[in-house]
Length: 305
Ligand SMILES: [Zn+2]
Ligand SMILES: [Zn+2]
Ligand SMILES: [Zn+2]
Ligand SMILES: [Zn+2]
Figure 1: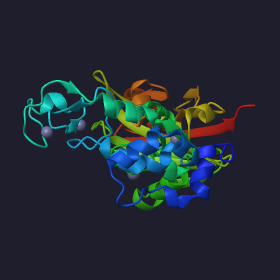
Figure 2: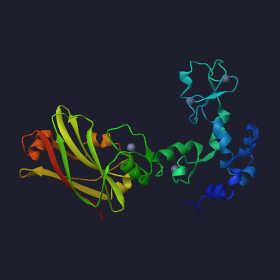
Figure 3: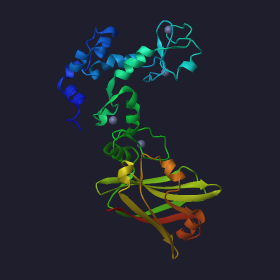
Figure 4: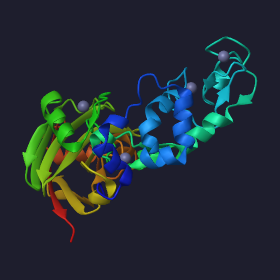
C-alpha cells in the first residue's frame, strides 16, 4: 500500500516541499494548483497547508464544504455557521447576504489531502470531498475507551487502550480463553443503570471486554453480561463466545458473537445482545436469603474456523 502510492512516496522523498515557503501568498498557491507543470513536480498535497487554512471556517474552525459562503468583502464562512450569525459577517460585521464562494469550492475540489489519522498509521491521500467519507471508515481511526459507566473521552489504538484500562481504570486483566467469574453485590435491590463491571481477557493475540451490569428493562431490573471485541467488526466476527450462569440445579446459557468496541457499550446493551438474567432468577441463582447477589458466570471464547 505504501509503496504503490505516488503521493506518499513523494512526501517521503521530498519532505522540504510539504510546507510552502513562509512568504508564499494565496496567489502563489493558486498558481501551483492550476499549473500542470508545477503539478507534475509538486503534487497538490505540497500546497495544502495554506489552502487548508483558507478552507477552515473562521467561526467553527472545521473544514468547509460546499456551499461555502462569503460576504461582499470576501470573508468566507461554512454553511453550518451561516444560519447562526444572523446575516452578519463574523469577520467584518457587514451584511452577509447570499453569496457563494465558487472559486474556493473549486480549489477545494482540486486538493488531495492525507487522511487525518495519518499519525495513527493511515497513509491514504484523498480528494478533499471524499476525505470525510474515508475518515468515517478509516481502519486506523482511533477507538473510544470501552470503559462503561463513566464519561471517559480517551481515544487510541488497541494497545494504548489496553494500557489505559489497566492503569487508569484499574480494570482486571486475565489471560486465557476460558473464565469463571464471580459477581457479588450486596443490597441488590438497588439497581442503578450505572452498575457495571468490566474485565479484559487476552487470548488469540486479541483483547476482549466482558461487561456485566444491571439495568432497568421497562419496570423490571435485569442483569446483562456480554463480550466486546477490541478491534473492528469484520475481525470480531471470527470469534464466538458462550456464557453460563446458574445455581440450584438450573442454568442459563448464552452463545454469541462478540461485538466490536466500535459499537458503544450502550448500543450493545440496548440491543440485548448478551446473556440476560431477570433479577428474580439472578437472586434464585445466588441462593441464600436474597440479600446478596452472588452470580458465578463461566464463559469461553473461541475462534471460528
Ligand atoms: Zn463554521
Ligand atoms: Zn466580511
Ligand atoms: Zn485513513
Ligand atoms: Zn477510559
